[in-house]
Image (tube, rainbow, N blue to C red; front, side, top):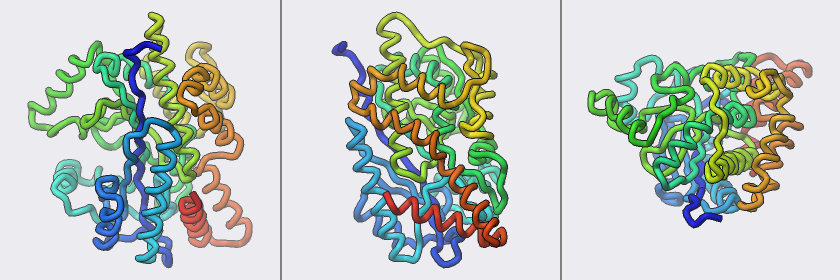
Length: 377
């Protein structure tokens, strides 16, 4: 192993929606005591989000997948504990099955007030939550080189995470409706390519110097160089209801990043494909999850998703062994076999309807399932 190999430490951020246990609807005004109690125990690892019905957590910088698992489990359990004291429950899903965005209030912080003023109705509709995974790559030019190659894999990662099939009481027919909502914001979607880290900085600074954004925390691409850390941050994922699914995605992303680094070390690189083609796979992952496959851009045809996952597992096997996370990467096949949160939500709704429930009762059953699955980690 080269002495200059990046650390590839990881960190995971998750946003949860806060549900009233009686109505199963989102809480409109989360009690300040809840945030105070969580901050007293978790300190800087917890923070409010744009909407008052949301709460965000972030792991420490983790050297191993097991460390990330332990920290994320602790964070989830702490939010569950304190929320329950207020008759609330967090759900680890990217949309609520029936809540209305029109009923939500944004958090009273200067940043969020400015966002609401700048983005108007577009940002008020952001009743969505996401999961972000950071991988540390200290060298800036290496970071931007991997940044240019990683977008090929983003649809594959998204398909493993889907948890937003419902929107305002309707089955959208998509596995990740969250991205449909999120793409209404500026500076979203697949990132462009840059020849160097310097070019990236010069490009981003055009908007900063023009006074349009304060910094690159307001660049919301599916993958971005973090503004705060020496990391590449994957932002395309829905929140995984099952903790082990989130850990699988973090491990897989970390291994893909190291696989691309190994290629570079051997004077090779992943073939570059036009964003037009990668976007088609992004849409397929949003729409179908992994049910109808993705385009293998090298072969030029649609391939069963399970076959693509098996290829990724094989490609990254040396990296999974290096990090001691082969089992976590292999868990992707378990997700394919039993479905994502989106699949389970749709199944829960359909089974409730078949049992004689009306739409409202069936949607409440989905919320109950999400509460239980989030808490059982």
